[in-house]
Length: 131
Image 1 (cartoon, rainbow, N blue to C red):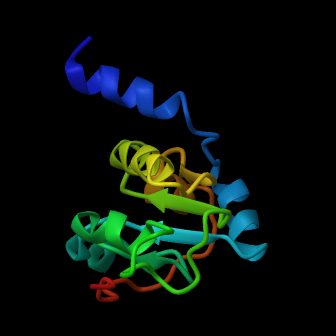
Image 2: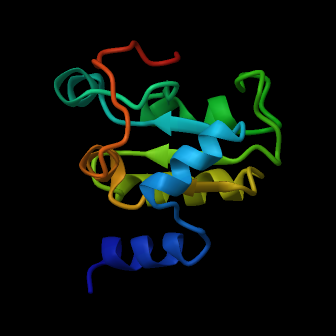
């Protein structure tokens, strides 16, 4: 196994990963879906309605419950589902968020493409990311 395979395995060992329907349920119950895909992917493939696009380079600052730059709704208890294209980068990102104190952070199994394949709602993409 490579070092990145080891990192993914370690990250996922801390996550209760969400299948697409579970992520949709969490969102309906007040959880936050965070899309870390680059704008080019969101523009070409679409977005999850109600998701918040945050580029990966800003993620920790916007979702650290103790950060002065966090989104206003972020608390240590907030359920957050991180979404990337296929569910790899999101696993690493969600584990990072847990280490920062966002204890209910997880990611979407299969990423945005699994959400779309499950027939769940999507919308035209290209929403600018939260700076």
